[in-house]
Image 1 (cartoon, rainbow, N blue to C red):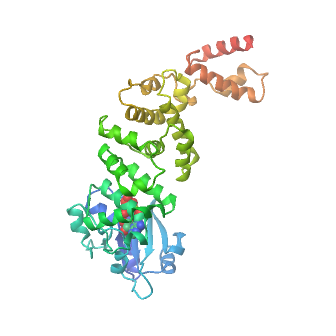
Image 2 (cartoon, rainbow, N blue to C red):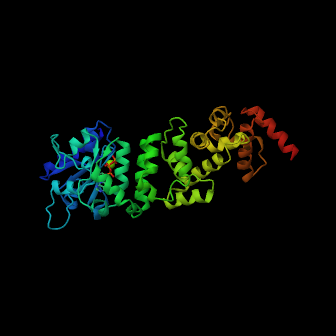
Image 3 (cartoon, helix red, strand yellow):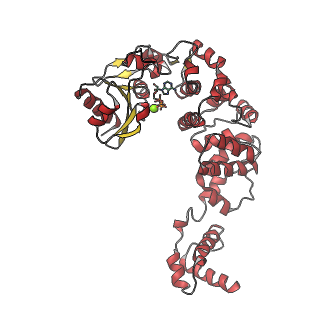
Amino acid sequence: MCLEKAGNYVLEQLELAGFEAYIVGGAVRDKLMDVSIRDIDICTNASMEDIKQIFPRCIDVGVQHGTIIIPVSGHAIEVSEFKSKDVNHNKTIQNDLALRDFTCNALALTSSGEIIDPFGGKSDITNRILKVVDQSETTFLDDPLRLLRGIRFSIQYNFIIDSFTEKLLEKQANMIKEPAVERLANEFEKLARHGLSNKDLKYLLTHKVIEELSNLFPQKNIILSALTTSVGELTIKGSLEWWSLAAFSSDQHRAQKVLKTYKRSNQLIKDVLKIVTIVNEGLSDTINDYHIYQLGDRRIAAAEKLYHFLSPGKPAVNLTDRYDKLPIKNKGELVITGNNLIHWFPNKTGSWFGETMKKIEKAVILQQVKNDEDQIYHWLKKESQSC
Ligand code: ATP
Ligand code: MG
């Protein structure tokens, strides 16, 4: 069952049980824009208890916030109770939509395909305009994450921010330091997943809201000058490239601090720091093949991109070519396994096997021995004699 069908199934079940239910937010926006839908959020007047009865297999991850996940054919459909401003407001779809951030996200879709659009979101999507739903001074104060979401949507969908919204964004830019770093990082990750062109990066880096996050982009001036002197079109795509650029610094500790501030995973921090190190070293030709092998294709591609971007005029270095020519790309490609070693050297014990496999791996990559069973055997015999 496709995602949309799974969403409709949940709508229909809720309606059959006598409740109102709508697909809301991003899914409706993306459907109208003909963009592929990544997740479906449903809003209903059913209570968490009602929902649990209708869908006994639901996963109550966010029940205290009025949200539940319904698994349908491998899709996770998020169902929330209608929200309202306070107890004096009725819980209706209109009141729920009024609490959403931008008009393009304040849309609801019924099971029969009717669109509920109290704030003109549909026409704003057609005209590619990003506008806050709540046209008051408090909208960004209510949830300052909206400042970053606004910038993200304008980049992602190429929307023009309307003048009231833009003025408010600039006026209240300093509030961007308020939301939890995980929420900020999540928006950046979404932006990175979409990808950023030179134009997008320039816009982002010079926007007042991003300027307020002063620990991001320690080398902002170098990046901006690279963007203006134009080094050709560069697309920053994916988490690794994004955080490598956002944390890039000639000072490792500073780069690490940025990543820690945004609570990135240890693996990502490790990956980014490796990239930062080799870019700072100028992707030197002295990097040996074993180092290239350990870096792997993803980190090499990101490092090359960053290097050519941040060091215009420096001679091009092509580590990807060297990576492609490596005799093996991972240890699974070695023709021998630990079993060969046990068979060849029955008197050896313990850690010798692991250490020897590592030694063989390195020797194959450095082309000291061919990835060939006989040759490895003879090379090992010779090595053990010389020890
Ligand atoms: P994406 O497709 O990139 O995930 P999205 O709009 O679906 O974008 P989500 O974070 O998944 O973003 O949020 C789903 C919906 O919830 C939004 O479309 C919007 O209606 C509402 N929403 C999310 N965050 C906020 C917020 N900070 N303030 C108000 N409404 C919000
Ligand atoms: Mg979404």
